[in-house]
Image (cartoon, rainbow, N blue to C red; front, side, top):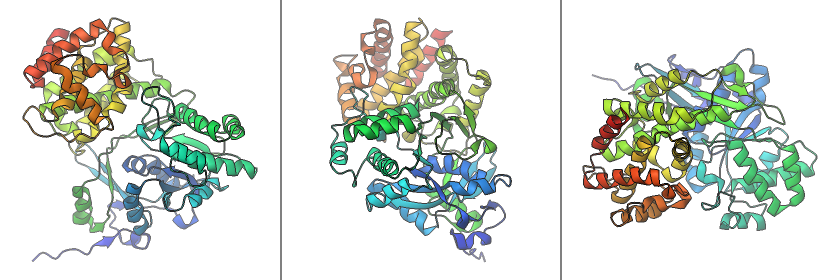
Length: 505
């Protein structure tokens, strides 16, 4: 008779009860002060910044210095309430499940997150926490959409209802920028030094973008405050990288079945982890370099490499694979045709327009990407990869097309991805008729434009907020129109993939 093992709820009191195969904090969490406020506590933050900080706190040589860098999470939207509730119940602990390609699994309880606040419940309390002298860094993972940019101009949308609300009600903000400026105003008035604002979003020059939108909002609110921010606040650029799929019930059941550990919201990730940061902090920072982060004078070549190879590579597999009928990234890579197509795109179209990256062997980096994508233990769903493609492709893929057009380079592999995205947005099913799970703020606009393809092959390309003037390029449109027309005649995208590979020789 099988006797079900006792379930151990994850919390501070039960840490000593965990089996030895589950690592747990080796530092006294009650000694930690909140030095970092983080807005947007999703899976990526918990597998990345919180992970690096936890490693640093567990480093014997750094424990005394790292006590000032506990993290307080902030939720600004109603959907954040669930993670807030789970974390509070678990004393802000969670398990990081690191799955290696060879099947090895590391399990680590992360203790660097020590509090969580819901801004929509008490905006003033969140502003005060940001304004506290203990707060040295406010970091963000708010995704591309969280920067409130006007789709047509790329500038901060000051006319958005939430932005207007925040200008009128500075003590009751809705946008993160309202919170940041309100807290910085308090620090300025109290004669306190500012905090560093650190974007951890997967956006090129994320610090520069954050600086631009914060200053734009601040100028409409208080010109003197804006000048003070411009002079005193740092916004370091950073490149972040760790594949972190959405948590599934299988992850929760794995911990319970293997270890009797009840964690309501663990995080699964790959072993690879990278963080390249410009060392521009105004009020101190953790010594993350002791645990693997890399501080550099200019992050530009590193982030361009990552965006054009890893992120674009994800979109290549995500869109072509979705139309074909694959469901996960590793499923695509295990298909020789898709793996070959991806590598050819990287070699022939992406690499020739990259800058030199000091200390990086690009061939080895691409080999590592293929290995990471093929990790059979990271079931990264294509639906996740493709979500908000209208924000991703203008950053990840379209610039590569433009640069290759300017240099008379290859465009065929990327053109097919755009054609597949058109079919995907129009029919919203794969080639077998299975419905696709499409999440995109521009879903209706993408669908309407793609649906016009039968009358105008360039209809989809004419969404200028996504493609700019790409529809004006005769060389690109000839290749694209040929591919999109062929795809509508026969949605088996593998036929066109093979043709593109043959044409490339």
